[in-house]
Image (spheres, rainbow over the protein chains, first blue to last red):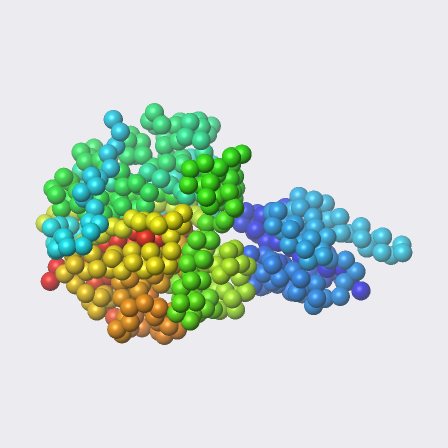
Length: 121
Length: 441
C-alpha cells in the first residue's frame, strides 16, 4: 500500500503562479519511490493535467481543490497528505481526512521519512 | 490643483433626453495595451505607472499621430478593487531613480495620476484638458466623449491602469481589516460575504423565476475563454494559455453558491490607453475612426442594503432604453454586445436589458441564448472580447474590443459585419455604457 500526496499548484509548486518551493524534482522523487501523487488546485482540472504533461510527469490524479474527499475515496493509501499555501488548503485537507503541510514545510520532503518509518514497522 | 471630475450634468442618466448632442462628433482611433502580469513584482519598470506610460505610447503610435497632438487626458485614478497600499506609503527603493514624483507618494504605484504621467512623459507637452473619470474606465470613456463633443479637447487620451499587489484580493482590507465595522459595511461586510455573493443571490433568484440553472452558464464561460485566448494582449494568452472545458467549469469550487470560482475574474496588472478625437482630426489618423453614438449611466436606487433581482432588471432595462434613444438605433442593429462580465453571473442582466438577440423576449432568455451559437462566427456574438473572464480583470477589455471590432482588427473578429456594438461596465445597476458605430448613418 502506498502513501498519497496531493500538491496545490499556485504558491506551492515551482511552476505555480506565484512559484512555490516544491520542485518538480521533489515530485518526481516521490513518484519514483512509489508515492501516489497528483494535484488538487483551483486551476481547472484540464489545465492541471496539461501542466503535469508539460513536465513529463504522469500523475495519478488531478482534481479541483474541494474534491479532496473524492481523491481519498478513489485511492487506498497508508497516509493522505495535501500540501498548500493557504488557509483554505488546510481547511479542505483536514476536512477530507488528509494530513496537511504548508508549502514551506514541504520543501524539506518530510514524507521521505515515512518510508523508513514504515519499513521499520 | 485637484483634477476635476465631470459635472453631473454630463452623464446621461435619464430617459427622454433624445438623440445625444455629441453623436457624430466623437470617434475613437488608436488603442494601446500594456503587457499583463498576475501581480506586481515591485520593480519600477513593471509598475502600474510604467505600464500606463507604455500603453499611452502604444496608443499614440497606433493612431499614427504625434504626441504633440494630444491636448487632453481623462484618466481613472483608482487602479484596483483589491489590496492597496496606504496612500502615504513611500515609494519603493529605486523608484525615484526611474520616475519623477508628484506630491502624492503612491502615484504610479497604486493610483493613476495625470500630473504624474505628464511629469514622466515630457513628450505630452500640449495637454490642456485634464479630468478624472472615477471608479471605472467606463466613466473615463463617457467623460472623454463629452469633453471632445463639447470642444474642450480635440485629441484626448482615455487611460486606465490596474495594479495587483502580492497578497489575497479583498482579504485584510476595508471592513475586514478593522476590529469593528461601520457605515454600510456593518450590514453586510461583517458577515464575511465574498464579493460575488450578492450577484450569486440575485442569480439564484433569476434562475428560480425563469426556470434556469447554473449549468446553463457553461457555454458562455467556455466561449469567453476561447475568445480571450485569441487576444495576444490578454493575461491568459500571455501567461496561462489554458482552455476551459464544460467539465472544468462545472467542477469549480463554490465561492458563494451558485457562483463558483470560474465565475470570478482573475485580478491582474495591466493598462489601456485609447485616443478619442473628432471626425475631422481623425482624418489623418492611421486607424479607422469608430463613432461614439451615445453613452448612458445608471446608479443604484437601493431599497435595502443590497440590490434585488427586480432592481437589476429595472436598471438594466433603463440602460437599454437610454442607450438606444440617444444613439438612434435599436437592439436589432447591434452586431455584437461586449457588456461587462466581471462576475459572469450578471452578464445576462446586461444582455437582456439591451434585448440583445431577443426574439421578442424581454427577460429570462439569455441563458437559453447561451445554448445557441454565441461564438464570434455565429449570428449573435456574445462578449467577443472574452471580457474579464477570458482576459483578466480590467473592466476594459470589452470597450477595447468594441473599438477593434468596428475597425475590423479585433483578434477575435466577428464574422458578421461589425457595424454597431455596445460595451459597458460594471454592475447591472451601476453602469456606464457606450454605443459604438462604424458610421453615424
